[in-house]
Length: 616
Image (cartoon, rainbow, N blue to C red; front, side, top):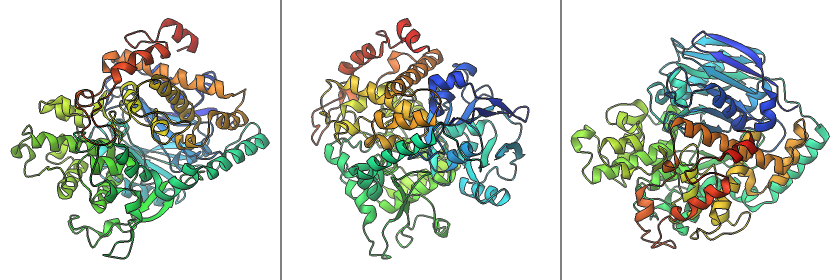
C-alpha cells in the first residue's frame, strides 16, 4: 500500500493528460519522491538536453509516507534537469500541496513537452485537465493562488510560478501555499519554459497503508521521540531554523559579504532571538507565530509581521504585506543578510516576502547580490553597468532595490537573474561566485565546518546543505560530536548523511526529523506503510542507490570529478577571525577517501562493481 500505484502523464505539447500505472519494480528499488521520480527522469530524459528545451521533463512527486499519519508527511519534490546548474535537480517542499496530491490518488505527475500558450493543470481526485492560464500569466504567486482557489475550491492547494519563472530568471522557484517552495536549482525556470503556470489540486481520497495497527504504533513512537528531543521538541518550535544564526556565527562559520569574512557583526540583529524582541515603534515583535506543514509536530515555520512604521522603502505599497504569509528562515536571513552585510531585520523580512510573492530562491538571490556587490566594489561592475542602481555592502536600500529589480527582470535585475556563476563569469571574475556546479552554497563556511566543504563539493544538485547536514554532528553533536576543524573521518560522515538523506527524501518525510530519529525509527513506519520488508539497512541501500544514480546522470550530462571543487577563496584565503582563524578547507584531504568509500574510481566515476551491486 502507501503508494497509489498510479501517476499522471501530462503532454503539454499535445495538451493531453493520461493516467498510467506507477512502475512498482522501480518503487521497490527507489521507494518514491526523489528516488522514484529521478529514476523516471534518468530513463526518459537525455542527460545532455538543454534544461529549458521541451525535451526536458519535470516531475511533481510524492513519497509513500506523504499524506499519511507519519510525522512530517507533507513533503513533495520537483525533479528535473536544473536550469541553474544543468545537473540533476530535486527540490523539496513542505506545506500541504504534496499531501493533497497524494490524497487525490497520485504518486506523481510527469510534465513533458511545451504548451503553445500558458496553461495550468487542475486535479480533483481522479479528474485532471489542462486549463487556459492566459489570465494568470503575469500574476504573482499570491494572486494566482487566490484566483485558483476561488475558481476551483477554497480547500484546494496550489503550486505556482511567479514572474521569475515566466521571465526565465535562472533560479526561479515553484511556490505552494504562498510561502513553501521547491526553491533551488531553477525548477521554476523549467516550469516557466513549459508555459505551465500552476497546478491546483483537491484530494479527498485519503491514503491507505499496508498494516494500519503497526503503522500507528510506529508513528506514535516516532512522535514521542520528536516531542522529547531538545531540537525538534523545543529549539525548532521556538526559534525555527533561525536558532542557528548566532550559533553558527559563534562557531566562526557564517559566510559574510560574499564569503570574504567568516563572521558577521550583525548576526544578533537578524537571528531567531531578534525576531522575538518587541519593537518600540509598534509594540509588536517581528515573529507573529510559528506554523506547521501537513502532519508536522515540529512547527518550525515562521510567520512574521513587518514593521510598517520603520520600513519606508516599499514605495508606499505597505498594505500589500498586511497579513503576508511566511517569515525568515535561517538560510534566507543569512543569504539576504550576512552574505550582503545587511543587518536590518525588517528589510530582510520584506525581501523574503518578495521572494515568496514572485517565486525566487532566496539563497541564490542573496548570494548573487552579494557577489555583485563585491564585483562593484572592485570596479568590475561599473556605475554605468548598474544603470542608476547602487550596490554597496551593508545597504538595506540597495538590497531591496536589487531584489525588486530581479523579481521584475528589469534593468540590472536581469543580470542578477543569471545567478552568481554566470554573472561573475560575464564580468571577468568567476572566482567570486561562491558556488559549486553552478549552485550557490548556503550558510555554512567550509573553512569553519570542514564536513560541509566535502558536502558542497560532492552534492549532485550543486552546493547544498540538505544533501548532507554534517552541521548536526560537527556543531550540534547529533548523533555524536565531531571536530568541525578536522578532516579525519569526514568522508565517511558525509557519505552516511548523504545516503540517509536520500532515503528520507524518498519516503516523503522531512529531513528535520533526523535531528531526533534514526533510521531504526524511520524504517518501522516505512515497513508498516509499504508492501515488502523495509529494514534500516534496506533504506540506507536505497539512499546509496539514489546517490549513485544521480551521479551517473551528471556524468552523462558532462560533469566530471573536476567539478567536485570549492571556490578558490575557500581553499586559499584563510579564515580571519573566530575559532577557525587561519584555516582553509581541507577538501583535498577528504575527497580521495570519499571516492574510495563510495566505490568510485580516482576520477569520481562509480566502478562497474559498484554500479552492478546497486543496479544503477
